[in-house]
Length: 143
Image 1: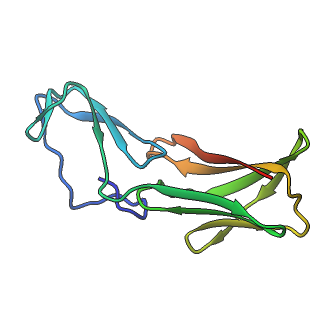
Image 2: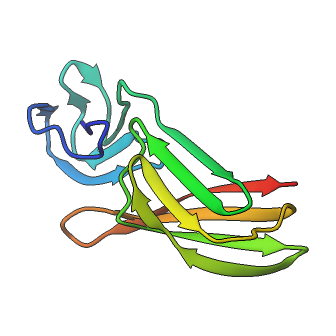
């Protein structure tokens, strides 16, 4: 299982029956997909694929005022190693900013942001030791 800070819970044990666990994938909502050659996990009948949920709810909030864009992430939302914020105004763009890590999320400080814009926040989620990775993101339209 995955802790709310995105780290692996090393105390949680999954017992696959009639096979083993292969690939893992962490979804943007914090749920974990397991693949393998098993017919059940612990006492639950699951053939070859299973999905685990965390007890903490994934939460993301993208907000801005005229000088700061903030992307707050909490709960079982996967931890990201870097973030970018894209900004469109009047259908023109995107203009890309690199996010700065702040407590609870990421932020871009820019003076005089337009009132009518579309903002996309994207983050890089590191995957397994084999080098896999994915993107997590959120879009918002502001007027």
